[in-house]
Image: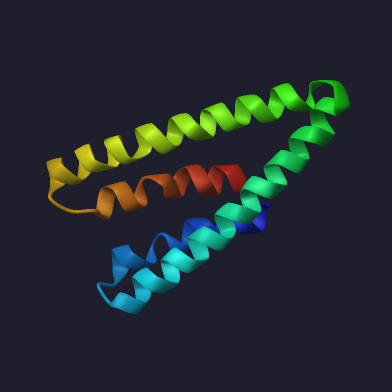
Length: 103
């Protein structure tokens, strides 16, 4: 899982360092593939850590937090992009968190 987080932290740099269409395309493909992998590994890990009796609760909580992030993330990113008139900050802001998660 650490490798997936490092790849995700690296791929978000591509659109920030290059305006080329291929940088955005590669970044999108890597993000999508790593995201699905991280989600699957996290649910498996939750089952291992919590045991069979509490797995449903743990997976439900993870899903709720994920849903909140899906709603709030774009709102925060849009606000930051409007303030700075660029997508660089919203694109780079998740990088330290992804690297922290890899540890």
